[in-house]
Length: 79
Image 1: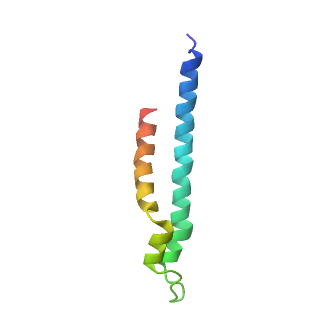
Image 2 (image 1 turned 60 degrees about the vertical axis):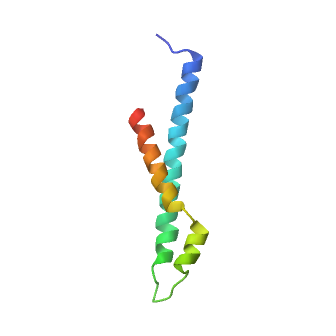
């Protein structure tokens, strides 16, 4: 049996949300790996930014990543 158009639209929307969430989490990972992590490391004993400045610039990105990873996992488990 074929799905009704409304049901097809719902399924497409759900998968679009899933794909968007995957991309968002990947983007947060990239920011953390390529920006935040190097900023926290002293390069040649020179501190680029103090931890307080990193927190101001990137505020709660680590918390957001954690929450969105849980949300993504729950989405994936449901599909």
